[in-house]
Structures are given as C-alpha cells and as structure tokens.
Image (cartoon, rainbow, N blue to C red; front, top):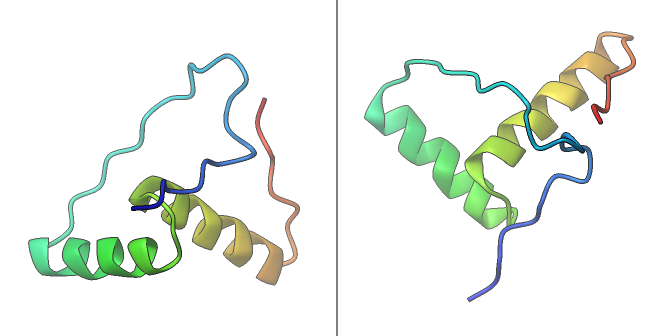
Length: 65
C-alpha cells in the first residue's frame, strides 16, 4: 500500500484554515476514487484541481507558506 502524496505547497506553520463543502456521497466517492488513482488524498487532489483551474484562468496560484 502506498502513501498518498503530500502537498508540497502546504502551510509551513501547519495552521492553514479548513474549507468545508457539502457534496453528495456519490460525488464524494467519485472524487475519492479519482484522488486514490492519482496517489493523492482527497484534499490534495482538490487543491491540485483548483491550482490548475487558476492557471487556466490566467492567475498565478498562491503557494502558501
């Protein structure tokens, strides 16, 4: 069993705020399956998608820290 990839851009202080959303259990299961296939946690998978979308929209994502 492999360990999920850690986010290289995570908060250096370890005190990044949490972000909560409501999604259906079915959609969450699909997200989790996709994240697992990429070797990532669900949170890191969503952050990666968000960063990619910011880049697509012409924004430079803040890396944190």
